[in-house]
Length: 327
Image 1 (cartoon, rainbow, N blue to C red):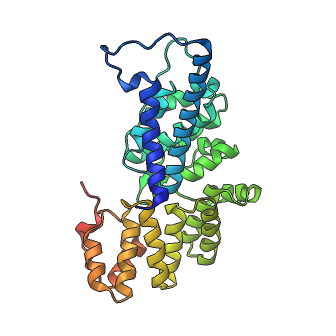
Image 2 (image 1 turned 120 degrees about the vertical axis):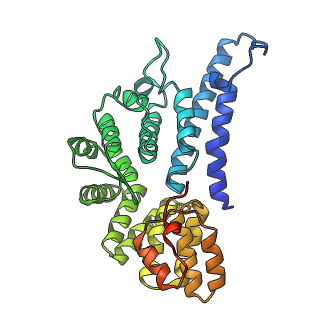
Image 3 (image 1 turned 90 degrees about the vertical axis):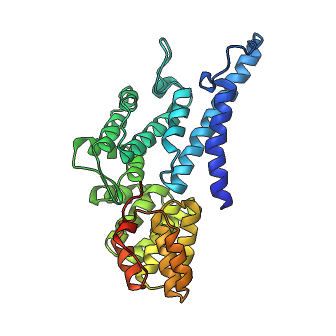
């Protein structure tokens, strides 16, 4: 397993477990357990600081996992756990508003948007998420939540509709960058990405957006430019690797395709696109038996027409069943 991916998984999972076990009622302390001794003022201060740092580390690990892998099977559960422990989804009576007053309010707002994106993609919308975003003073945050909730789920991801909510979200740099992360690129998002990349040439999500948008136009030099800049910010990420894979496919660079697909598969093994890229490259490199065996081990569900066309051209046994999502 890729070491960077393992580190991200361990950070996102283990830190949440530690945070819940040490500080949260969500850890389920048994009633028979003896109560802890009354802490001193210094202990409370130390525990508060530790709790805040653990929460920050957890949210940062989840955010990085999103940049590296995209969505992952435990994403919704893990985001929910962190947000609930911080009181962002189920605030107790008299508790300060987490998205405004919590020391990690900025990270919590970001996590709420990531959760909204994950739930919209899965078709499961938790009303607590827009309710929490509605408490933000900046209207761009609830507007982005509404734009994500109203997006159409398509093969490439969430496709935003034309709405004042999206325009409002794109007007603020922080919410604009999150919109680029959540939504399939279109002309509006590409214009925003160019403006953000001009302000910060190394920004990750603007470059990923521009690479994906260039791939849709078959502008492969532009794809490589933006994808390589994105890799400079996040070298383990699946997003630029897939973009570079499509560029290699267009150039019939089978060795390059195999390399990029292997990197992408290490970041997100459940993504059928990277696995199909590997099978295509193996077949074109004369390793057909290996390619067919690899194809049979892949998760089902790719709807990428360029990859399906390339697989058929490589003589791979693609059937309708293999292209449908698994159940």
